[in-house]
Length: 223
Image 1 (cartoon, rainbow, N blue to C red):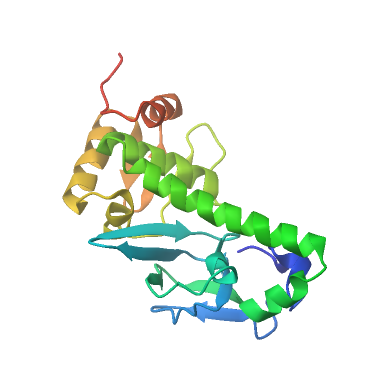
Image 2: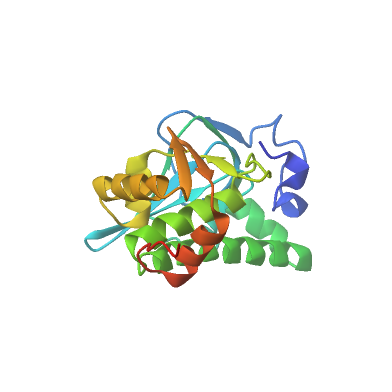
């Protein structure tokens, strides 16, 4: 869980550093009543963001210390966006009107909002770019990204991530069938690039995973 003082919008938060004690804190256990007029900061857990464009549905994840809903600050076209908690989660809800009210004649507030929007857009763009890769590279790139973003990762010789979302959520995020995801995980485990134990994934060969991620291609052993 992130602390209120480390929140990326703490400098302009209308609740100051007391979000954990006040009305801004929102606990999510199953569904999330997503408001298009609100910016959310994830304090703990994981939120799945999905948006439909034609016949395609894009999914991405927000982890502690990350935001979603910043597009509502610039337009109201958020009807096709859905948010769902993948596990018990805590959020801070920051109403659009309060954030915009604080941004008037406040350079720091404008910079904070701009950085928050850029950060959320970067996560979306990374998700879309990943769809161009081979399925092996997609999975490798996703695991490396989770290794960077999840706060409890093991910093030791063999980093380990505890995924906060189901395989069906991950498959949707990566634009592949769940069966394809399972096959890729099994293949990477058999070649000792990773070690799978439920939702826990040990990253045994970081160099090879990085090479696979950068190449964007199917895994072929270089041994």
